[in-house]
Image (cartoon, rainbow over the protein chains, first blue to last red):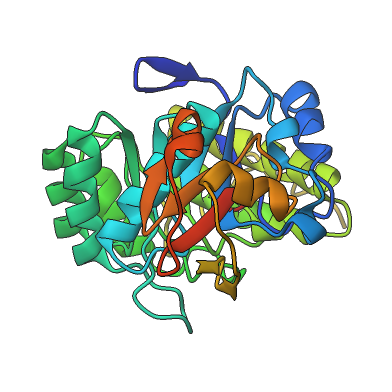
Length: 257
Length: 62
């Protein structure tokens, strides 16, 4: 079953960030062939000599959902402004609030993120805040009216995967808006794990964009996300401390001499 | 004035500035002193030496 956000059914639970991609032409290919529906983008100053009219805007499919990332914002005012710029450029009102509190781990400033969310929700944006996996922050954001929360699995680009499973599970269990695990997912198995935990979607950027073949890696993540989700929906078996034989433990052959 | 943090000597309006610096006029947003100036108003904004201008667009990002 698809994920419903902002009255839109999102069938593909793999969201893709487009930073560091060597070639934007892979974006429409991912959309058409892998049915990836949500792509994240960012806002930056441009230089006419370097950019020479080459714009990611020419590669974003009209039928895709574009999520404006406010990365680069250091406080809520900058995040709000970036969201407005992104909406002006794309017409999309989906905004991922990313406000970095420091640069070494790029951890989000949850306090500034809450302030930005309050303003952006009032301004009619569909708000997706990137947060540290803190249930209390997630609950406050849910109350404000954000469309989903995006807790990190581990620091951006670290490829460490799901580093704080218990805290993520607490958010998944306790809030009713979608939970999109974002950041740090480095391998398809990490993405499966996130989905098995009950995440509603994952957002992957670095692991796909910096791989030797971004399209093929997106395909691998696509399969992993689907596998994890199917298993979650069916229900995963409980873990046990001792063996539980798969083959029957009766009627063994005993006559061999 | 500063344009994307580069010192520029210019007299005229915002649209003329963009053209003189070879910026594209499509797929960009322009901020003057931190405020978005809509494209239809570019002609009307006469620039001053102390203005801080930023020309931005969409890029790949996560």
